[in-house]
Length: 454
Image 1 (cartoon, one colour):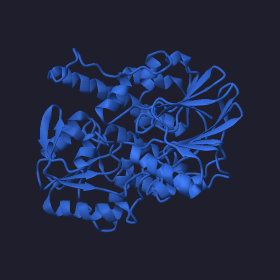
Image 2 (tube, helix red, strand yellow; image 1 turned 90 degrees about the vertical axis):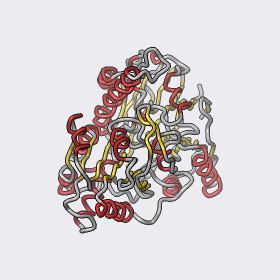
Image 3 (cartoon, rainbow, N blue to C red; image 1 turned 45 degrees about the horizontal axis):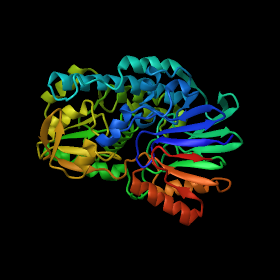
Image 4 (cartoon, rainbow, N blue to C red; image 1 turned 120 degrees about the horizontal axis):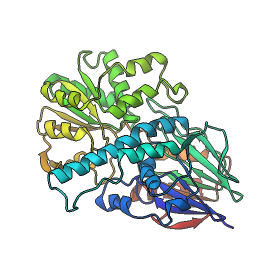
């Protein structure tokens, strides 16, 4: 029988990655992510998959970010009982991210119910913290470059993708076919992470396209962030920095530490990391020294260059402080979490600053702030945006278009087909066009829900 892939997410959008591979009555799901951003996309999280969770024989994860792992608690709660395969770093990060995701969803539903801000009676979380804790029992870890069989006769191997701790590209060999899932590719010049490995040979490639329509600027994060925080310190304001707890929080902390060491920023400028997830993630850098660029001294500095804010009371106490200060808080697209309270408090003052640190999925508050909207809605209230908005163009942890093409060029031979995934339509189609014209490979952007025989 032939091998097929059904694109259940990450097709025509940058979120919700789910790729269902079928062969000989068996099914394997590569990634199991949440949809984020536009309401139309978020509503897909509540729609049933085209097969029951019990019909899935195995799940393989490329990495821990919620747009790749965040649907797992729901899949397990609804009947998936088999293993979830990933790298050790991905497992450790999912143990941080997934319970927090469930907790935030419970909090959001409770807030909506408490303030009668929902048409649902009552509003329910997609899943709970307990659901997430239960699914973690199904995780099985595998080292990079060590093949394993998630289903008898199906062979999988992880290679380093850069991007964040544990991030992998996945090579699947089944039915005589070799299928490569790039996962999220890191940059060759990342401030924090080591670059992606060369891709193994494959017949079919699914390649991400988050930045498929652009190039990263020549300047680095220090050159962008330094002058912005200098202005902030001089006027005594508060910088609210929405960060992804995994990866972005640590790279911004490392940049601030370097700027202080160079004398660009005053050593006395207070910095707060207000995210229990980010605090826990920062500690993991000691456990995986081979996956990032930092030496032991820099890893130690990462944990000591900011005040680590863990409890809700500690977070609330920040409101009683005066600037200048920098508050890093999740979530990175301002879709939920503690950062919303800081935005509600500080966004209305022109002395303050909002620093956008990476890709913002369309429809998120972060995307609206980056686009210059003068008001955003937080917890049912309209909040004016008078603070200076600074969007870092150099902070992305994704390869840009040229870096992605360079990664593909390192393949031993041309694949038969490339599917361009994990990108908004413009980014995906522009990368498809470059692959077709510059590499002369067959490339296509799949539609959501479509199936391809490979």
